[in-house]
Length: 221
Length: 247
Image 1 (cartoon, rainbow over the protein chains, first blue to last red):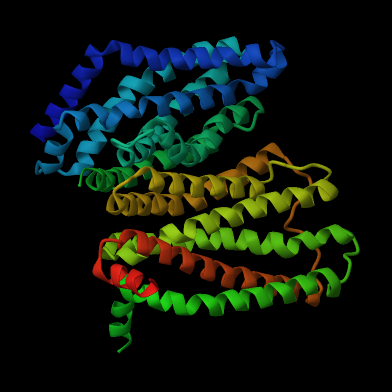
Image 2 (image 1 turned 180 degrees about the horizontal axis):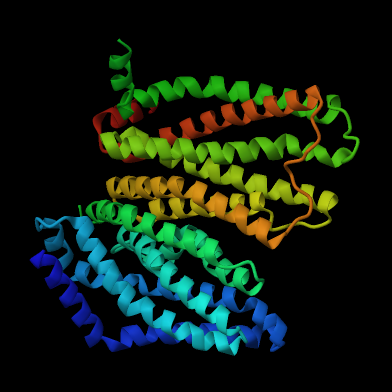
């Protein structure tokens, strides 16, 4: 337990000290979303229909870009090896690291999303659903992404490889996340989609830390 | 007794010889079956009442789609066995199967769009089956690129095995989410599922083609695994003896 609280505090402190890491991911998200109206034209109807999907895809890509930082620094200075050796369960350590990663890299995006949604002309209800869906969905992205990040530790071209491995696995989250907003704007109610996102989150919380722990053992063997 | 045999052939050195003996049989069988299957599909099977001659593409399309899905599962099983029991040969088999699986996934997509043009009037629709087949193709590419990015064969085997297992757990989730997404978006109005019941010769042609694809896969995977074995064991004595014999 002491080890875990130490780890949480340390990772949080590192995230706070390296503000630029957090901000670059956030601004990538903002810029990426702003490019779409420039690409497809400013028709309000079109933008309104595209908004949820664009925001979700941008969140997917932003979260994928920040995955490299999840284990890379600890791997480079040997801390990760010490973590593997310590008696605390590796799955719990992974969970703690993923939690801080989510807090530092994904939560800012979730908070920024409603503002960007306004630019796409989404209604008040849709903005709520969008935020809620991102809140449920982005932790899944961090957890599933951790599998890709741990498998590609120290490989050449790791960043591009992570996207190949992880993006197909992100598809269900994208479908139900963007689908929730669509369902609520078309009057179907977003309850079903949000419940499935919650179920995916529970599944990811249960299953991925073990897989990431196994992957870290493979990569550091 | 069978147990002893299994252990014996789990060794790459003995399996190399066994695979070499098995390849010609499967290759010849596959060639014969392809010939029969193609003959049935082009000359024997009747013209479809609704779809005309263009339907004949299903004789390669459907077996390819079946194989692409089945090979992924077989690959994941080999990968899991390799990860659990640390058998080198299983990981090599998984690695040998992946390119063939990706090839079949690509053939299924490619022929599917050729069938879609005359039938649906478009090369591509975001139908649930098409989309999930595309994602399956992406999963194969991910597996292959991860394995080829890692230089250390042991780490490559184990990392590939893990991603194959994660993929195989995800395949049903992806399939159902894509299916639900499609019904909500109301994409294609024509569905593949309500295909009219098939004439017996059509079914026979398709099954023969499927078995031909099977034997082809076995022959190709075995010859690929032989090369992988040689590459990995190139420093061992039996490989150098083998090379001496060839000289």
